[in-house]
Image (cartoon, rainbow, N blue to C red; front, side):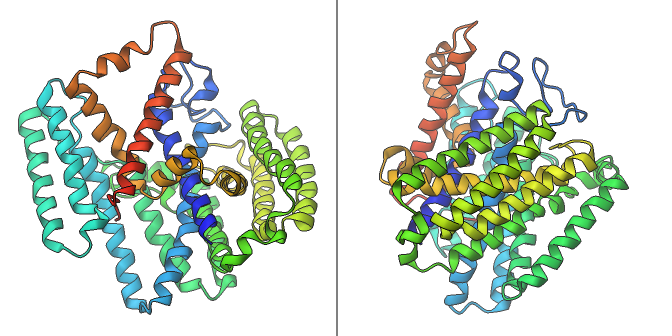
Length: 456
């Protein structure tokens, strides 16, 4: 089971790297596939008429997938510890509130865009305060959490009165805000259907019908147009469950595996077969991004059907361990490709069924490749860094903006960072961004090794 968890942590770390990296690549000068497809260069204005997805549009669904897989893995451990239904539900709501609070705290304590030394110093203090509230080392020391919250409140007040930062309910990290709701819904649905997969399938079908009907009635646009509603409710809270709920089935599959099965021949196949099959899976993921970006839907359908048939035969013969998850991925991906014709395209904004189904399928394939990679390179430095960052997702998500950037500005090293991107060389800017974000992941990995891990 351990290498399964390593694979999941690694994939989660890669997705967080992608989230941060995609936000700091040079804007306006790179090919359109280097950005969100619906925010094309050079202006990057949102265009909801543009159909397609690219690698940037995958990182968030991959993270949702990882969250869904992790729910049964952690939930079943709680069941083994004798946690009652009331305690589990209470814990779900408690974690939801902590994630909800986190989405505000890290934004309201980030003053790194302000000029001067003190905003950078107080931003770093805010990062430390977050560690006091969410640090796993804190354990059940309630007074340390309360002290951390008091310090956080003081830092927010300083930012408001000294640096002119606005404080209101609309200023929150939308990604964490959305993940909080997804976790709450997903963990509760999993718990009450954990012994009845048919019931979970019924819930999934209801969500699918709800998504189709509400999109047809344009409810997402109606709720978003109301400023008193959109700050706390978004219809996509339910839509993205079309990714998370199937992912809980993957988590169920992984949690039921015995430790020894992870290294069994029927799980891994021969080395030669693995070296041929899993890179092919990765190439298929790249093909999906290319074909969906180019609008090659007919060709994509043909290639996807052929890949699904050949891949299922290969999995059934050499990699029985992945048979169920590979079958789920193929079915939902092909259904997603079929939904493209019904929905008139694949869109991240507003979120479409095709987007959820296809990104789920790709997420499964990426997990399989991550598992293959960790099997052979599990002890390598790169795998250790990304998996270490993946074990510490809250810190990984905010460390760049709340620790690295203010540190560079406070010490003057930001001049070296900026000089590393000479005008007219956007590729150098991309490399610079990748290096700094990887350095951020290494910091989180190093802090995690020392026991500094955050947990909602």
